Amino acid sequence: MQHPEFPDPLPEHVAIIMDGNGRWATERGMPRVRGHVAGVQSVREVTTECARLGIGSLTLYAFSVENWKRPSTEVRYLMRLLRVFLRRELATLMENGVRLRCIGRLQDLPAVVQSELQRTEERTRSNTGMVLRLALSYGGRSEIADALKAFGADVQAGRIDPSRVDEETLRAYLYDPETPDPDLIIRTAGEMRLSNFLLWQLSYAELFVSSIGWPEFKRAALHEAFRSFGSRHRKFGMVPEKASGPKERA
Ligand code: FPP
Image 1 (tube, rainbow, N blue to C red):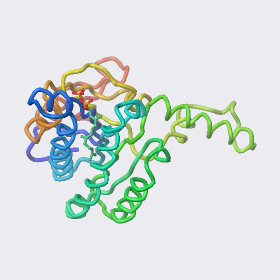
Image 2 (image 1 turned 180 degrees about the vertical axis):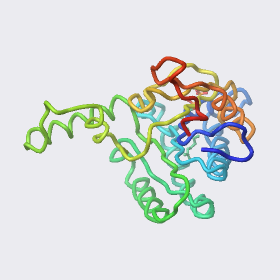
Image 3 (image 1 turned 180 degrees about the horizontal axis):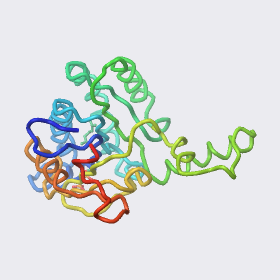
Image 4 (image 1 turned 135 degrees about the horizontal axis):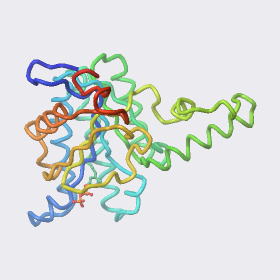
């Protein structure tokens, strides 16, 4: 995907591990939750900028299955923040033509959060711009386990023949099989790991780690990640001569 402000093609699907909120707040002598509050500004700015540039999908790792083990006060705060975000940002999502979708074990979220998510998904359903996917109560391994459970039920009911299974069969059981795999995965705050995020879908994604904590990750940092992506030569396991870089692939 090309944009006049960038010499090289942009990724079609960007996934982000928004890390470093707690550290950002602690370093400033504030409670950790203030880092999450500051992080919401980055969510707004990055979402709006990706939509403006014509990115197809943006997936944000907002709450992992492991995050339930955090102190209950922090978990409650994050859930409240999410509700407030959904209410306050609806107008911005509509203005930017953004469609909201959620992936994860959504049934584990508080009922009020579930209904706010459903409401926002409904309201933004006919928008034709970027898809903003929030990964909530999400884990890559749980997603694969959930897929296996649904697959097993279909085998048992005689709806599918296990001897004909291939990669696309498994994909069809993932939370959101229609969205293409991320081309670029960004992680903020310097850690070099995937933390159970989109384990199946990230197989060929380009990795960009920023040392900037999420509350300070704004437009300029996003552009740096895009420029880095544009300079990569994606091989998809092939030999370099046959490989297509982002330019050819877009
Ligand atoms: C990781 O930072 C961040 C989270 C667990 C939550 C991310 C949430 C937000 C950005 C705000 C709410 C989201 C939306 C979509 C409205 P951390 O707390 O693990 O930071 P640390 O590693 O420095 O402790």
